[in-house]
Amino acid sequence: MTLTRIALLAALVLPSLGCSSSKDFSVPREFEPLETITERPNYVLPETAITTIGTSAYVVNLDEWLGRYPPGSVEFVAVMRHEQTHSQRQLAAGTLGWVAHYVVDADFMWTEERIGWYYELITLRDNGRTINVDAVATILSHYKNATNSRMVGFVEAKMWVQSVLSGQWKPQ
Image 1 (cartoon, rainbow, N blue to C red):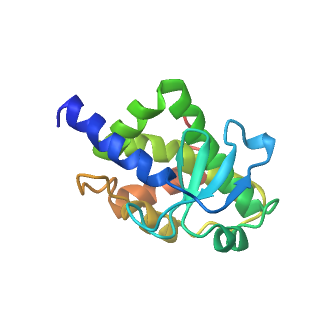
Image 2 (tube, rainbow, N blue to C red; image 1 turned 90 degrees about the vertical axis):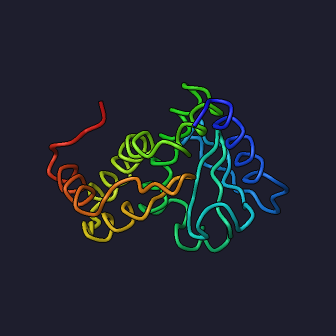
Image 3 (cartoon, one colour; image 1 turned 135 degrees about the vertical axis):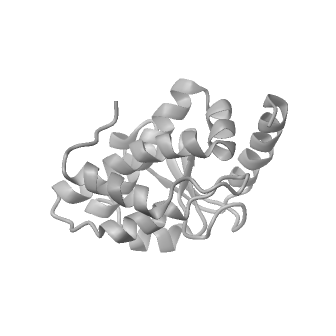
């Protein structure tokens, strides 16, 4: 895929995430550079997904999402650390280029998701939550990019989660 097609794809994806949201939630300062969680239209991504573009994280139903991840809860903190990592890396690399790369390159997606998921998993584990390795591996093995390429297979994802929890894998 040419750089022009990648830029066009990103240009199509970015505005669809941010168009006319009806609700915003101000993210606590500890998760900067994230600023808000914003409602997004129910298309492009799965309904349950939270995704970050720049300083905003997007969900389909903000009230429902905050009900599942109440601010201040371990689960909220874990997800915010994951999304904070994406925000930091996007801003450092250039958000449009980062997103364009992410949506078409499954290897890049896997590299970036490992970093975000590392912080999410470690936060959960270190705060006494039990990690269902198979459930996390299943979630990861269902990620696909805009070219319909799978990010990672179940077996590789499971081995990676186990390596994180055993202290063998850390972001570089």
